[in-house]
Length: 290
Image (cartoon, rainbow, N blue to C red; front, side, top):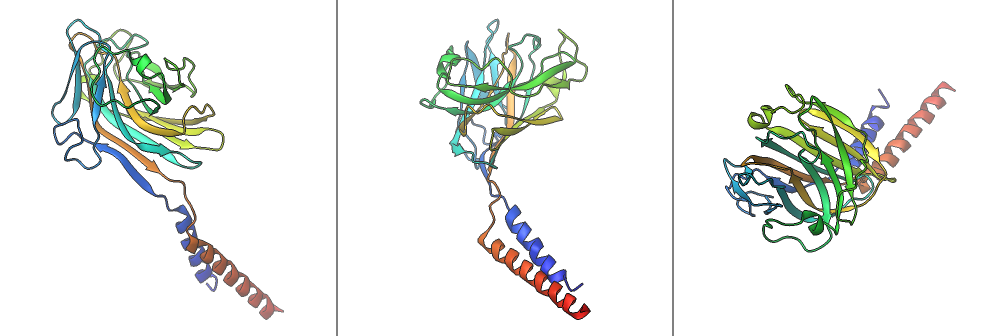
């Protein structure tokens, strides 16, 4: 019981060290009915980049891109946030929900993808239709997650993007198979239409690279990689292929930055005081026993 007070001091010191400062960079639910900076706090200005004609609207408080009839589109929904550089222990987290009535998620390029990037060139200030996305991204670095397609199990993996015209072709994360209820090869996944799917990517900087956590449709997997193509980020991108008047709908976009735990100055005094008092009490007890 006599050591209770020093223990309380040590607990207080640990709490001080464990404190993290989290900053919300984007928090967009499209509830203001638009895709530009509007009434929502921390909402973003969204631009669409597509390889073919597509229309983009905010419908029912969600961002929806619809391909023209008979014309496959590659709609990229991009939004920028303040340049954020990750030091060791810092975390950048990105999450959103989506639905899609696309019925052809069996080709390698048609899975939904999302990522955190550093747009090295000039940032977009308007939509780009029929754009060569790879050329636009030639100065962009970062990481993207490739989601599964409509087979019963498909790997969800992270790919890196260096300053070149395409994503790197070799995944840098361990594959994690995600089962989609009721799905088999070459079939329509009805849950894409009726049930929003949660997707996320979290990156924590380490001395040698990154620890990651990826979420998709209720499944979460994590690991680490050492391929460092970016440490500063300023853009999110969500994209897929849609065909024949089908659509991709995005909502509940959240991007946060959490700084590594840094001991507060007062915690050093707490540690020193607790250690000193514990030592004094120990010596006192030993003296009484002697």
